[in-house]
Image (tube, rainbow, N blue to C red; front, side, top):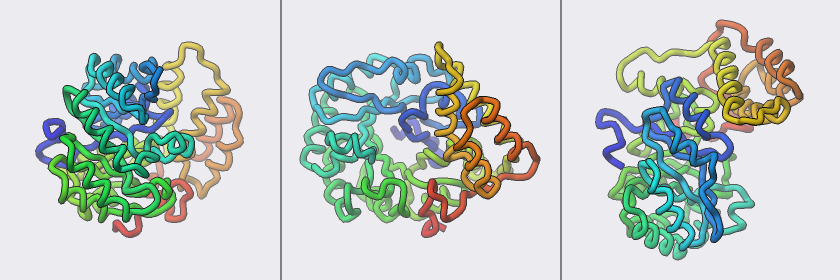
Length: 342
């Protein structure tokens, strides 16, 4: 993994987000500067699962020129090992195990973040996967299931295995996305692990990214919802580190991004249907509209049902050359908990 990290600055990674980070989204992020490393949406792994065709396209048809790591989620050891071997037949730059998804339906199945309740089971899975995987093996986790006090025990498990990177979302599973991150846990992992540690969680602008790195000494940042809201964030961070000018996007820049996102994701589906596609765009817009026009755009977007209504609302609030706010409001229901990282 160290060979994928730039030697002159921290690494930038796009977080795997289910129903978001598909092939068209990766391509679009690359157009805006994009990450150094992509990670796929997770491949759901069960005893009888195969490789999801659409998710596989983000590997086999990826023309961004950036390395792509394939992520798996599940708890069946034999199936995880089988799937890892199948994925390594494709042009992946590594295999990642998801130990952080907080979705209740996932956790109830003892997968994703639900596995953090069972450190001994995590130990067994990591041992088996390390034996099965020929190339890079990485892990993405949270700092515990219910309490960050669980993290030192989890860290002991991670230290036992030859993983090439550990990405840590600095909240517990129960925290979901509602609380501040815990940078001290990431810093503890940086000190303890032999591999690079990537910090994830609530990087919403250049200042919050730099603060996270300052508090943790992590080898890089993984950007998720902040990248949906501001695809310019990757380039802004690079510009800061390289001494260039940090460009501030305007309303029209955002309008152009929304149009590009609409077009790119629409073209991905051979049986395009406007109505469900507008609904898909509304899920992206939950993040994009935060802090714009004092909530007026979000209010309208929630109620649109057609393409015409959708873009009419966007134009009414974004067809201007005023700079956009870099950071969402402190009390945002979508982004929260970066005050302690200033």
